[in-house]
Image (cartoon, rainbow, N blue to C red):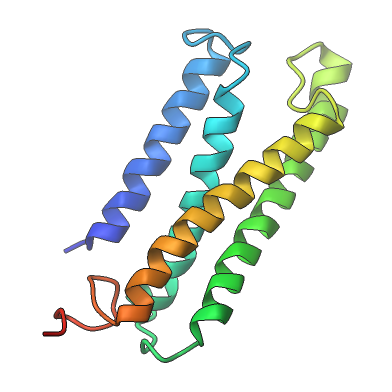
Length: 150
């Protein structure tokens, strides 16, 4: 019923939400400096996989729909747009909730914001490179062709 890519998207989203909830809830300790890096890297991968899944499995566009360089640029751009929206959300959280009510700040400084966007980008590049391999060779389970060439 569901393809492997769809199940991967759900599993990765549940994993990211569980890690974030455990960190905010105090189980992992919100002070772990590397946790934010891991979550943004995974988030970049998740958004790139979501865009690829939407185009080639959900909408079933043909494999020659886009040149591979444009597909890679599009996946990375989609992730960066999502990363910027997430940073807007974190800023809004800090401005309207955290500072007035004494909650934990989501972005303590500009370096944190830039680090978050960098690791969103890194995750997007890893996912785009992986998918472009399948796109280039024209096989795989990603709606390109159903069988591997001889």
